[in-house]
Amino acid sequence: MQKKITVIGAGLAGCEAAWQIASQEIDVDLYEMRPRVSTGAHQTALPAELVCSNSLGSALADRATGVLQQELRTLRSLLIHCADDSRVPAGGALAVDRERFSQQIAKQLDAHPHIRIIREEVVDLPSDGMVVLATGPLTSPAMSDALCRATGEQHLFFFDALAPIVSRESIDFTVAFEASRYGRGEQAAGDYINCPLNREEYQRFISELVTAERIPPRAFEMEIETGVQAGDARYFESCLPIEVLAQRGEESLAFGPMRPVGLTDPRSGRRPHAVLQLRQDNLAASLYNLVGFQTNLKYGEQQRIFRMIPGLQNAEFIRYGHMHRNTFLAAPRLLRPSLEARFHDRLFVAGQLCGIEGYAGNIGSGLIAGQNAARHLRGLPPLRLPRTTMLGCLIHYITHIDMATFQPMKANFGIMPALEGPPLKGKRQRAAAYAERAARDLGAYVTECRKD
Ligand SMILES: Cc1cc2nc3c(=O)[nH]c(=O)nc-3n(C[C@H](O)[C@H](O)[C@H](O)COP(=O)(O)OP(=O)(O)OC[C@H]3O[C@@H](n4cnc5c(N)ncnc54)[C@H](O)[C@@H]3O)c2cc1C
Image (cartoon, rainbow, N blue to C red):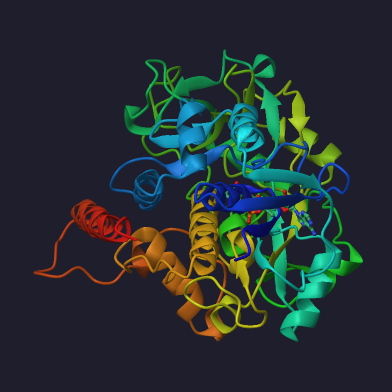
């Protein structure tokens, strides 16, 4: 029996997949092209680098990402363990010190006797042996071409954007204040830095934002298959650049990423018209990211316009926002519910490439693809998590949804099977019931599988 599996891409999904395979005492060759070949968004050579936000989503037990994170703990995910270990305060969210998070993972992978990391770009799908492909939304062009050839179709892509990061010491705290929405934070002072805007400040900001100069899309990014049209480009709806969102209506930011609900400006004692929130980005609390401020403005314009926000007039930009292509396969047509490819023998696909959106979901798909590749090798049936679990439901969704409406999906209660019994009235009550059912069903499933 072959005792080795190749994992391509040491991102969130690939690292988790490699760990799950190696935990079954099967050798793993884990290929990663960085730092030799860059993706344009990653900035280090570290595994499982978080390219944008440092948050894995709400950790609250009755929120979709909270349920998913708990499932990852139940399934013994390495990456969720490392996330818990590098956690920084962020209200109810599981946010991490991104460098510590990746370093913890690197340490575990390096030390594992069954894992060998190979720093090389893989330019074609291997013709033999078991493979987990986890090259992510920024899959290298050579591998994208190989996938086109193997699937016989254009795979899909659209635009996605990153938010800027500023240094804490450059923020003016005579204006900005620390607080968590509704006082829900972990730190007494509050977990977020908030920059309040009154109506006039907000209107001036919006009028400059919508007319600011943007970075034009590159030629290869214009060959677009799907997405939300805006000007010359198409974007993923849940990651729209702030300037595109602002074009939808003057108040769209005040009701979206700049909503002021649950926040009181200590200087006025009132709720501001709009608020920019900044979230801690590293354990040292020296860096903060502009929450929801993904952007594709030219760098000079970012500086000019974001410095109009009260409290950021002297902001030092450590990283500017920018935009990227986002690649994913037509999963409903091309993948089985085990995450095994229909178009290539002994190939499993994980991460954003299989159409799951969000850090926690990508870790989860890596976990299942890794487990299933190993189980295939051991002659065991694949894991099929109950659809009532968040991870099981996500995988079911991407492998069964109508292709006409398919877009990467993140954890949410809306895709879960309806609850049994009489309808529950409150949203929170329903969420708690979904969470409880998911935990119960996953617990029972795991007990059953451990008999294998
Ligand atoms: C610009 C951008 C911003 C995002 N922001 C967020 C966010 O804020 N929050 C969120 O929840 N999700 C975000 N996502 C979505 C997604 O959750 C992340 O991209 C996540 O990292 C995907 O995990 P992955 O394992 O699929 O890919 P990645 O983590 O990107 O890992 C893929 C790895 O494969 C390597 N690779 C690529 N091609 C090859 C090759 N041919 N050979 C060898 N190695 C290769 C890459 O270098 C990379 O290390 C964002 C996506 C993009 C594109």
